[in-house]
Length: 159
Image (cartoon, rainbow, N blue to C red; front, side, top):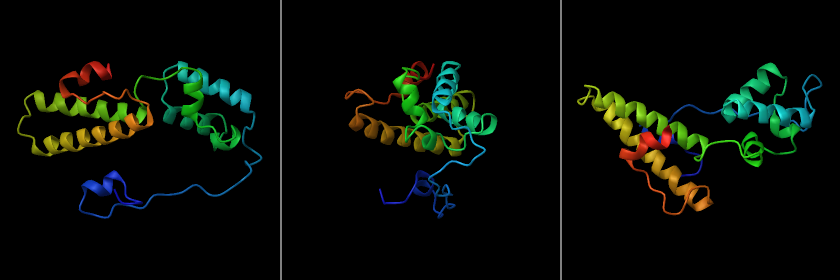
């Protein structure tokens, strides 16, 4: 894979839209919440309530005046805080989202829409992304070495 490409550009014939980057800043704004212990407790509480790390980041930003969790927690990410407290699923969050998307497409194709060619291709692309992520996570040790994606067992993994 080429440096600087993403999956949207990989599967489209177009160039895709450019992404935004956070502004550089070593210090947090004066209006932000910088109490690391309170923020860690909030992350654990929200994780126990069933929120994903993306949802936790949005809640912290919008309701608790924390624009950047990593700057407050000394470089630790929300996922690292959740993992340290044994909160989270058996699969990484991005992979689980792709597996949920695949289940939705399989359900659509199975409920009388067998000839929907656009969604057949969408399912193929989604499954390719899942396999690519699985290869990465196996090399990182976050998935067992013998783990394989199987379409017939997908509903059991997601539920």
